[in-house]
Structure formats: C-alpha cells, structure tokens
Length: 291
Image 1 (cartoon, rainbow, N blue to C red):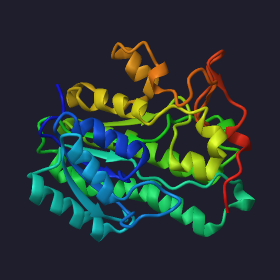
Image 2 (cartoon, rainbow, N blue to C red):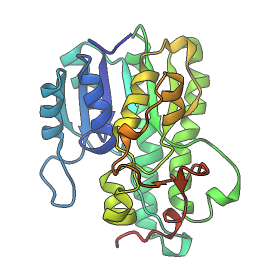
Image 3 (cartoon, rainbow, N blue to C red):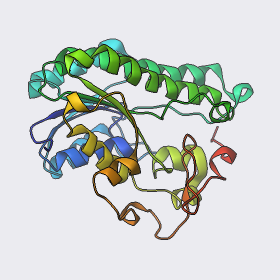
C-alpha cells in the first residue's frame, strides 16, 4: 500500500516533523492539507504554510495551505470543510501541532500552561472531532498523534510537569479514541522518536546548535509514520510506537542515514530510556528554554 490519492490533514505541518510527514506522503502522490499558524516568514522559524504547500507540490503531491490555530474550534471546522470540498474527503489526521515549555512548576507561567494544554490536548480533541465524521467514510482511516508512550513513573514527570502532562493528554486521546472508534474501523495510534529530532523547537527551546548535532533528522519519524499509515486500519490501532522500532519491523537496518552528524552520540528523547552505547541522556533535563 501507499498513500497515492489519500488526503492527509496535518496540524502544524509547515516545518519540522509535520512537514517531513507531508513530503513523504507527497512522494506517493497524496493530497496534503497543511493546517498551521505561520502565514508569514518568522526569522526564528523556517517555513510557512505556503512554503510547505509549495514543497508538497514539488515532491509530487497536491497541497492545500490553510492558516489555522487549532485552538479555534470554528477555524478548524472551516478548514476541515474546505479540505473535504477540495479533495472529497479525509483519510488521515496527523496531530502534530504542539507547544512546549521545559520548566518546573514554579517557573511555568499560567499563560504558558494554558497555551500548551490548549494546543496539545484541546487541539488534538478539536481536530479529531472535526475530522472523524469524514474519516469513518474512508476505506483505510487513520489518526496518528505525535505523542509519547504513557507511563506512570514520576521520573518522567518531575522535570517539566506542565509540558509532560500536556503531551500525555494527547496520548490519552490515542487510548480513548482507539477504543471508541474500534468498531468504526478507524485506527488511532501515537508515534514518538527514540532520540531528539532536529527541529526548531530543539534549536530554539532546548539546546541550540550543539543539541542539533546530536539529533536525528525529521525524516526518520516521517518514514515510520508512512509505514504506520499504510497498514490496514483494522489491524493497527491503540499503539504507542517508537520510530526506530517501527522501521526495524519494516526491515530498515541502516539508521545512520537519519543522523544529522555522522558518528555523533545521539541525544535520547526525554520521554524515552537511553539505549546503552547508542545514546546519551545528559542534556535534555539540563536544557534551559529561552524566555
């Protein structure tokens, strides 16, 4: 299976992992809806909804660029309606948009708490609610959310409680929606990287250029997402996938192609155990976010 002719609605798809997923689908000839906030160039961030749409078209897909704040229920409903009008339906929802603040409880402004929970948890719910009436009419419907495996060990919560809980809310919706729509044939899964990924969030919010050198490229997540999204929805739901485990199952053995810097020790993601001899795990919890 491939994604030729399938329509993907991707939140936050103007850069980073969202854009990489969009481009991988575009190479199959998919229709890609880029639903993101960035309409105009920002010196701190690469790309806009318009540059992302142009890249999708250049890669072989069809694109629809929509400026959307996924916290705005009516804006999301309008974007979904426009996507259905243009492409005839929606086959896949990718919940990629996310807000981040790596601070402890005493250093997290309530305004930032509200932003993270508004984008991460509420945004995931709003996008799913708007897309599901169309997904259930697709022959192979999928919801894929970029969120970590659920755990209860306090060590994963203690450093950044507000952000961690906001991300786990996205993961809770994977469990909830997978159960709720199992009999409707909609696959609902989460995908998360083993390592830090070279994105604007890592550069601007976490560790700068030094951290980027210890990252993998967004394409590893995109290739894993492609493998999940091309599986029969009836056989693949309610899972919390890690990118390299997905690709190992798909037969990939050379992961060096995804390294930003060849031979560098890779930085473990802060929701995932480091693998001995492969990853380092010392920088994420020491990272200082910009004000």
